[in-house]
Length: 262
Image (cartoon, helix red, strand yellow):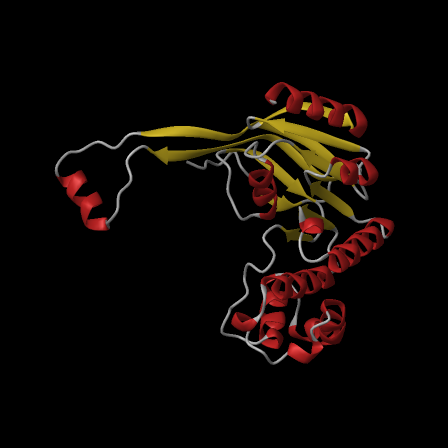
């Protein structure tokens, strides 16, 4: 259960940090017995049945800072808690304890297309998604053509999204989100989606954002990308930070874990 030890807010920090995470923890309850219907669940409660569950510690006492203009890596094996961490930073999930301070406008590239409505057209979804990302109607209108040009979807602007391929939807979502002009970007494997041409465009756009001095948190299994883009990173394993600091050293620790697992 979340408590009042958690805060997520913009804050004018007194130092060079864009993000401060302090003692963040998150648990999930995993039921041992599956309830197929609401009736069965209520019947079990009325009958005095007890339902067991196990506690999964997704994150345990996570602390780190990210400086303004830094591209900061988050690495670890599948199920280690990386995406949970980014969702907490984005405000999608709430932790059980800990604090998060953000200094600047944030754009999460986590599950691209969340917020889209299949029965609306591409044009309608751009305005909807842009509003979710914090843009005014006037701002969206001024960026509208650029969004469609980047996504290469101008001819499909009046087509309903349910008729789009998954690749087209990803292109539209990325193109819209990138136009929010954020100070902080949360990037979860976004460079691995879409076809090769679009991945290259994404990479070039991320490079532009880095050169503009924006702050980026990058989650990726592509160690070459992490080493190329990040000077510092953290390695999460079993919900805990087990290594942090200079990227090359942290990546070496990651590879050593992979060898042990193999």
